[in-house]
Every structure is written in structure tokens, then in C-alpha cells.
Length: 330
Length: 272
Image 1 (tube, each protein chain N blue to C red):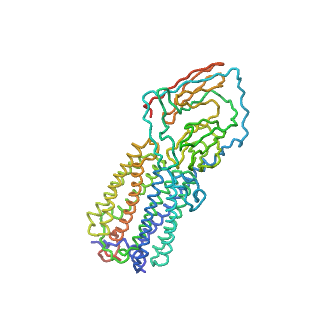
Image 2: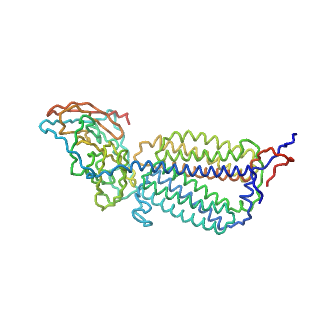
């Protein structure tokens, strides 16, 4: 062996020093509230999807007021039921996010988690502004699609806060297995997030009449290949690590469910519902479920990615002078 | 705290770059959306008094002719689609869609107008408004013709709130709510636009079409498919027949002095 020996280093210094470096204690109430906020976010996504599927987005023409009032309940008929309910649950989510951000700032020692909570607050405010813009500018496809995409981004942030405040994350000592395959599992999970996000934007653009349906359907093939590759790698190589196995299994199951729902949504909206005189129930149910499962799939993939980052760090090689060392966690 | 290796710095740098790129992308996304709307918002408001209308070209009433006829559906009329109005108890109208209204006599709701042949003639905009009524959670009429700049008076005769939301391509978009006892809404459209969709987002089955033209030579076929365009000066014209589902068909016609021409048209049922 030459003077320069192959030294393997751990590529995840950041993980050790950013995510585990500070001793923190589990705060049960804080965690339960974070979980509640994440669940409530899912409810808001379902409510928003119902607005789009029922073509009710502009049934309340003013914003931020609703028929001139902030909280007065209007006559809840037709599209107003969906739009007004969505506004109310979304408004409640802003309050919940404000509370979780304030609580996190007060009790949390991890500075990155405090920053994440503040990012959640910023995201939910941006989301509210986008929601207002969709009403005031009569649903331009780009703005409506950004509103749809940011909703799921916020959902992922809320799920992450719930995970980071959980007992398992705070108290467990991660079981680490180094990943020497290329592309690494972490890279695959990042690729999965990217293709899912692209799919989310394509779907939103189609739903908001900014694009034809075929790019969304064609990209579904790419998503299927990438997510299957990621899940198979995670389950075949790292099935012993529960924190990786569970989200990988859920991701695979959700992807299959999502493909079925996508097919149903295509039939009810594009094939059969093209000339429908009003939104029909099968179309509404299938499209809302497609959006909801899509949000769960994206959030699960983000969770998988974070767990892979934590448990399956990439071992990268670097030629440095000195003695050979075995890979180890910093 | 130990100093991070150079590679970690690189990763952090890349992460920061990726986040900034994402933010920039979001900004561009929003900008694209806003720009699109700004384009349509920048159109002048469609008010009849916004600009002085040019003087109308005089027409010799002693020589005018007319074009009339019937529009038929060639083939079996599709089964009428049912509407579910149960989501608003105040809606008690006929629960059948009006997108294709046809019988053995003819095809209704076809907008017929002189598309070409009038040259640079200008016409007085009628001072009387055309009325669009909301009754039984339906629009009456389903297809409406109006001259550019003419007032459209929108009434609500239902015991429920409607919102009126035209989604034009060439005119200014707007969306207004109209409670049961509210005064009529008066609007006009500045630019010519055929089959401009109007909908109510509260009652998603409520759809109708406004046709904005520059001349008074237009008509909408009734239940028997019949139409008549009167007062046409002699000349060579292109008559357009436009249906919301079946599209447009044109016919050339020459109208002589005091001549009453018959121009029939048929649409193929398979075109839907």
C-alpha cells in the first residue's frame, strides 16, 4: 500500500453535531401538541382538496373577510360550505402553528428545532397569503398550484416537528450502519422527495387547469420506479433498523394505494367526468383521496429520508496521509 | 466543539444553495402567477362611458334585408343530463342541464352572428340593458348576446345567494356575490368575445355564456332552433353559428336590397 493510505471517514459529522449534539429531554405535552398540529394540517389539506374538487374556490368572493365578515357563519349551502370551512380550519391552523412555534421557542434547547418551528410559522403565513391571492386573482394556475404545493410542504414540516419532539427521537441511541453502496440510500430518499415534489407540482397544475393531464401521468412512472428502488433498497439491506423499515414499508404501501387512487381519479375526472355538468361524488372522493394520500406519501418519504440520514450514514472515502482507521461515528 | 471537516462545509454550502434556489423558485412561481393576472387586470374597465364611442355608420333603412333560418342537430340528441340541486334547499328549478337542448325541430342556444362582411362600420350601442336573470338556480337565458359596451343587468330572483363569475379570455374577469334581496348588478364587456363562460361557484351546475359582439346583427336560437337577424344592409357576409359544445360553423351569404335570405345550418350530433 502506498504512503497515502485509504482512509474511510464518516460523512455525517453534521448529524452528530446538529441533531444529537445537545442533550434534551422529552416533553410529552409539547410532543402531543406537535402531533395534534400535524394531524390538523392533514385535515386542512383534505378540506382544501374538497374545495378544488367541488369547484368551490371562488364561492366566497372576498378575502380575508368572508362575505364581509371575519368569523360570522354564512348560509352554508353549495360551494360556500367547502370554501368557508376550509378558511376556518386553515385559520385555526395558523393559531396552532403560532402556539407550537412559541412553545418550541420556550422549551426547546435544540436551536435547529427552534428554527424549524419558526420556519413552520413563516410557511403557514405564506400559505395564507397564497390562499388569499388565489381568491383575489381568480385562481391563476401558478398561484393555486403554489398554494397546493406549499400546503404539503407545511405538512412535512409539521410531521418533522412531531417526529423530532417524540420520545424515540429524543431518547434513543441510533443504531448506525454505514452505507457504502452507490447511489447511497440517503441519495435515493432525496431523489424520491424530488420526484414526488415534481409530481405534486404537475398534479396541482393539472388540477388547477394550468397543464394537461399527461405530464402528471407520465411522471407517475418515474415516481414508481424511484420509490420502488428506494423501498427495495431500504427493506432488503436495512430491514433490521426499525426506524428505516417502518417508513419504507409505509411508503411502499402508500405508493401502491396512490397509484390505484390516481387511476380512479383519472377515470372519474378525465375519462368519465369530462362533460359532467357539476362535480360528481365519485370524482370528488377519488381526487380528494388522491391528494390526501399524496400528502401522506410525501411526508412519509421525508421521514424515511431523515431516518436514513440518522441511521444509515454514507461512508465516503478520502485519500489522506496517516494511518488507516475504521469507520466510526464521531 | 471540533472543527467540521471540509466536506461537511461543502455539504452545508450546498444545502444553503439548495434552500436559496428553492426560495427563488417559489418567488418566480408567484411572480409568474401575478404577472399573468396583471396582464388581464391592466385591461381598461368595461364601462360604456369610458371612451366616447365613434359615430355610427348610417344605414339606409329602405334597402336593409334579413337572414333567418333554423339550426338542427343531425343525429340523435344526447340524453339530457340531470342536475343534483340537493346541496341548496332554496334551489327548486328544473333539474336538467342545458348544454345541449335539441328536439326534432331544432337545436336551441346556438349563437348566430355576422362574423365578417360589415367592414369598418360602427354601430350605436343600445342604451337599454340586456337582462340576465337567476331564477330556480339557473341562468335565464342560457346563452346571451350583447354588444360591446352595452350594459348587462344581472338580477337574482332566488331566495339564496349567488356569485356571478365570468371567466373571459379577452375581457376583465370579475366575481361578485349577490344576496337574494340585492339590487341588480350592472356590468359591461369592452371587447368582442364569443361564448364567454359565466358560472356560479356556489352552485356548480349554474353555467351560461355571454357573447359580446361589435354589431347588433346577432340572434340566439330558441327551442325550435329558429333565428332571425334583421336590418342587414346589402352585402356579402359570413354568418357564424356557435354552440357551446358543438363548436362553430360558418356560412357565406349574399344579401341583396330588401332581400330576406334563409340560411339553415346543422350540427352533427357526433361532434360532442
